[in-house]
Image 1 (cartoon, rainbow, N blue to C red):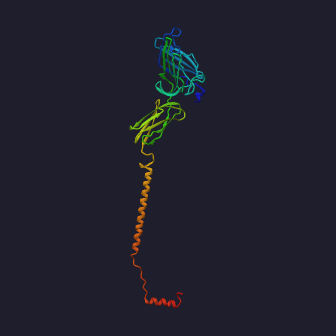
Image 2: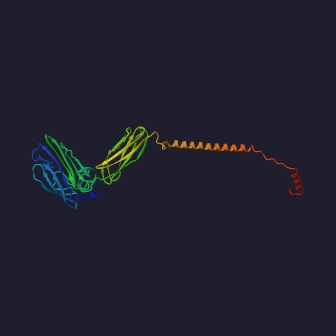
Image 3: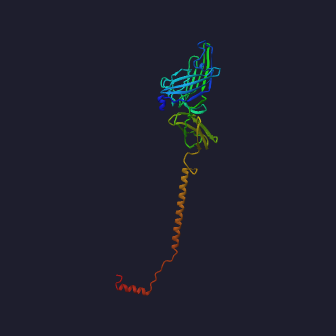
Length: 361
């Protein structure tokens, strides 16, 4: 972010972009000098442009461009110098902005001074690879005139990858129709396809025909756009995402997954894609009769009730056995003969003699 805030060049000397896809069309019934378009006419008959960075000094970038033509015109070399702070190019050819500062992101402005903001930072395919790009779209509304302009730059280097201009003008019998498209087909600028992470709950339990909302969190170290899609198996559960296209900022960004359906167990897979990067997460949805916790598939309250009843029955059984054993012990002791004391005559005589002598006094 620091480079973007300083509006410093991101392009390096020796980097090049080859624009091999160029198409230009223009027609009008206006009289000279209004029978040409400064935004389209310079590119009519151009087959390709090879643009190379020859110098980077402070906030200035110099390009050497070789223009090739498909109408028999010999190739020509054009030197272009521009400033990433002001956005001023010399010479100014059409409306193409050949570069911006490096590492800018939406909604920063294209240039530091008097310029519109970048509309979005996304991942798109250019020159055979996926890369993070900055996009600026402009639609101008005037009486009978609807020109549109679109510019796309590599986010890291700031070099132009795509340019489009369209005009359709009709007023008081006069008209202008034209279009221009310039697209990079080759480059030595390294591809930049930032990665991201997708996190969500692993499982969700909901009641039948009740909508449940689950948060999806997407995190990326850079700003990019992530597209989301879902698959549900088996059929029966109805799900939707909001939104399905997420603009991921430096901080985590969220989308929501809402599902509703009848009793059953479902697998909902969320697929997230940004350029060549993709991740998926599967959420198990259990649509149940009750949201009370379960143990071994049984409602927890019922499970604990069964445990209490079982414990009570066990305790009662143990007490009954103990009481039965105790009762059995008392019955056995009542059948044992009581001991009988037998006193002989000599024993009685001895006891009496002891009394006479004071032994037991």
